[in-house]
Length: 130
Image (cartoon, rainbow, N blue to C red; front, side):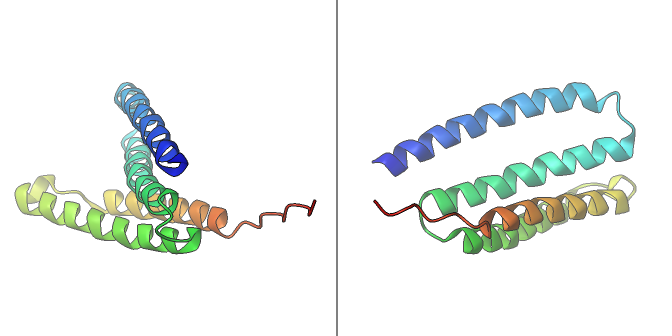
């Protein structure tokens, strides 16, 4: 029961962070240069997706931390690729996401993967025997 309670609390906090970040992003996006705004969009979108998948896999104890990170990375790449493909199919050629979009998504993905990988490989000191 404790794991389920912790997961529900994490999801509620996660939802609040998404709402607050979304509101801040909408207001800040209008005053930023395109490249900076595009990078922030990518950082937020990849971060939300990547973190949510890791949260679900690790907190439900379906996988160890390193395996959850790798699974989340693969899932994120697949989902973003599918989303970009669907966008490319529906949007006219002159309005499709360009090289900056792919570059910012790639940079964001690498940042999130590195942070999660470092987290997954951290050394937790053993508790002293009593």
